[in-house]
Image (cartoon, rainbow, N blue to C red; front, side, top):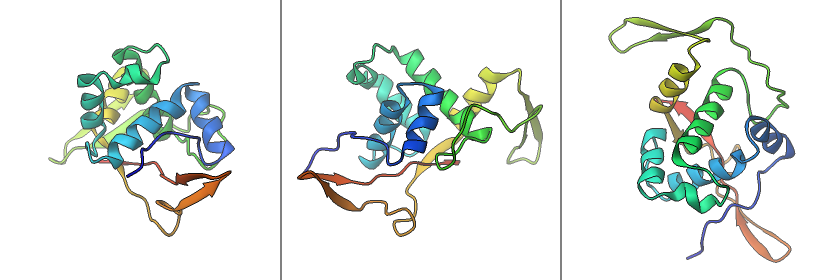
Amino acid sequence: GGILKFHKFGTEVSRSNVQFIDSQMPEILAMLVKLFQEKIGTKITELLKFIKDNELYKELKIGLNYQQFEYKVQHFLIACAMGMTLGKPWKGQHHINGGFLIVKETGDLACLHLYEMEAIGKYLVENSKLETPSTKRHFFGDLFSENGDLFIKLNLQVRFT
């Protein structure tokens, strides 16, 4: 019967890493996780469509239009694909040289070169989804109290579809 509302990232390292991409990224990711938990969808494309159709990006009160919101999500996914994790301090270094080699379901190969960042971002948005991580390993779903307020720990796990 409660209302899910973003409070903070679980660790200073995870907050710092996503803010390195964009200062508004914690709120953006919180919106995606909330919609995922509300069963709006699992695929990034489903969540972004819902956000666009319902103009939810305006709820963040950070002055974004939808194109800016989507751009920021793409850059988060690009950073993750190029080596950024939420558990280890990250300073913007990319651990990919050249590009991505993609094996399609047909067995055909496609290559996205690093100079094609727009295509890489679009590919990642179209082929990524959120998942529920292990409840035991990361304490996902645990309720806890701080200063008389009740919180629930939600985790972000992104996978390829």
